[in-house]
Length: 190
Image 1: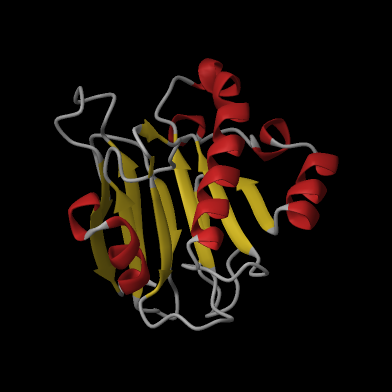
Image 2 (image 1 turned 120 degrees about the vertical axis):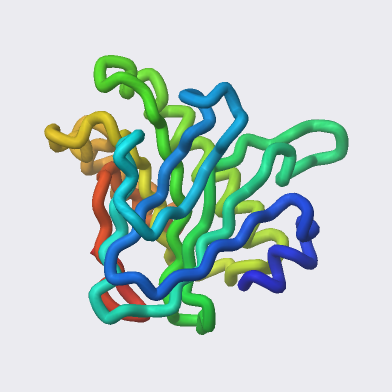
């Protein structure tokens, strides 16, 4: 998958991070550092920012590709883009793919971003399908993380059951609002 992305978007628009750690963290420093730092994958617990926590109990060899600014262009127009995509380093047609969007905002502001995040996932996943980076019929995961909402269950506020079903059936996207995921095996995350 990495090579297909590089061929399509160019190495200069992507940043790749590979790990086998049992637990690792995806963070977005963009807002807090006024863009001097952006999305990062960390192998040690970050003490300066809340994160999306990824449990990798097998452990599997995982690559996360971070999308740099202006990675997805349509002529002169920049398309909406989520933060990154995570996948098995040695991906197969049946292995999972996870698109990730992180909003490091105050919990009371989270709902402002719900619609925008869903639109980003649809645009990005459709782009990957149209560019044949992922198959048209592949069901992929989309994780919306609001790390500052760590102590609340926000999934049901992020997406209603009927909308979740529509994402699954119409767009082939398993969408979830959470701050923790577990890479169960090569085909499934929870």
